Amino acid sequence: MPGIDPKFLCHRLAVCQDARPVAQKKRKMGDEKRKAANTEIKKLLQAKFIREVTYTTWLANVVLVKKANEKWRMCTDYTDLNKACPKEAYPLPCIDRLVDGASGHSIFSFLDTYSGYNQIRMHLADEEKTTFITDNANFCYRVMPFGLKNVGATYQRLMDKVFQG
Image: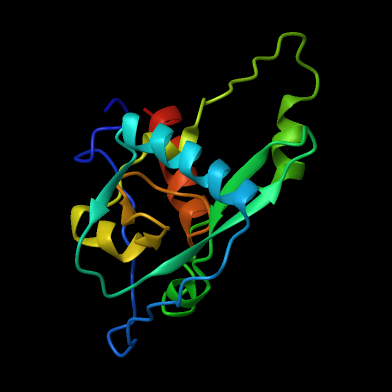
C-alpha cells in the first residue's frame, strides 16, 4: 500500500481514558445503498485501505450519501468515537494570509493530493477503533478515513512537514 511512511507521520486517536467504547447497532439499508456499499468495500479491500475485524469494541455504521452525479458516497458515522476524542489545537493556516502572500506573483502552482487522507496510515493501535459494520462483516480502516475528529489537523501537519522541508 503506497502512501506516507508511518514513521514520518500517522494518525492517532486521543480517546479519553474514561470513555466507554460504543458499538452502534446496525442500521437497515435499502438494496441500492447496500449494493453501492458492497462495491465500495471491494474497492477499499483491493486498495488495502481497510481490513476485516473479528472482535470489536468501537463499532460505527456506514452511511451512504447521493452525490451530484447520482453516484453514492460511503461515509462512516463516527459520532460516538468523535465525542470521546478531544479537539486537537493544531494551527490551521489563515486563508487571508495565504491569499495576501500570493498577491503580486505571476506564476502559481496548484497541487491536488489524490486521495490525500488515504495516504496517511492510522496508528496500528488505533485502527480497530475505526471499525464499521456491514451486512457481511466488520472492517476497520488502515488509512485515515474522512469523518474522524482531528483528521484535518493531521493532514495540515503533514503538509507543514512536507513543505517546510
